[in-house]
Image 1 (tube, helix red, strand yellow):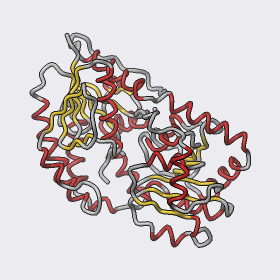
Image 2: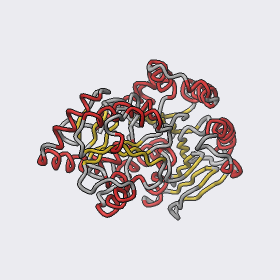
Image 3: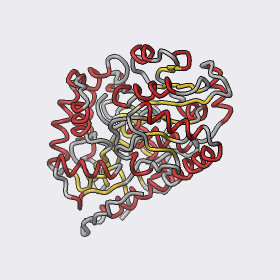
Image 4: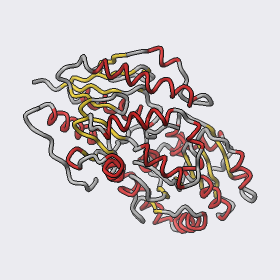
Length: 398
């Protein structure tokens, strides 16, 4: 019996976490000779020629799901695509259906984030702006049906933390959960001194400055306040470059001493060039599931200073590829200062970061999905659970 895999994702592109994961997996499946298709409404990237694209409701791609009106757009696009894609998948009898959260049932649900846990974290931190986002109502109902109702044969968690959250919030049996981390494009994310130099010139950052990098679209939840606080405590040769679409004004006001060394780049598609420009990646986030940005930094040989939350705790090792930090400006500044003062340590961290990322190359990660699909294509055998130990945005509503 020939193995056939169908992926379901609303947008297939190289922009965004879930979108790029589906794109990379399609490439792996094609290179491995697996018959594979992608059901999507918006296709914004060139796809491996061995992958068949089945566009459904393509008019949904005209509705903006990013920018100022993203909440309204997503409130329309997400549920509509889910219903249409669910019907489309039913036509593929015998295929293994892998959904990235955009169909009501299938064989494998890839859980990039548990929205119930994300909202709980926001409530604990005193953030209530998410109440203005109507998409959360749909996602809550959808997740109760899909996950709580066990509408899938297997639930793939992108980290051990996500696996625990699936059990805690939805009572998913451990035997129905597999842990497969997200992967990284090792060719796209790699050291590139020329690209890094261009970014520094573009934003007026001295070539010999120590450059910290922060990338994220939710500045409050991702902990930018602590990164800016650390910048205030560091030496005059240290700069902070921020990539993301949130309002920078409150954070500019914080930088009373280091305002001229705090640079906001806005939203960018060429993020690989920003990593290439950096000496360290700072990410004092309060909640993550895997944190692709940390892995992207490591692939570019940039040491990571991040809070050990979600999937980050599975691969960030003190003194090997970076350091775990507290959401505290003093702690961040002290650890960065120690590393920058020790060239040998910095060199070891850079090498260790790339070595870590190489374990997460997409061909390696994709082969695990293929093995799972082959197992599920044999209905006479029930899948067995993998051990809980790991070797590995969410997507959640913005």
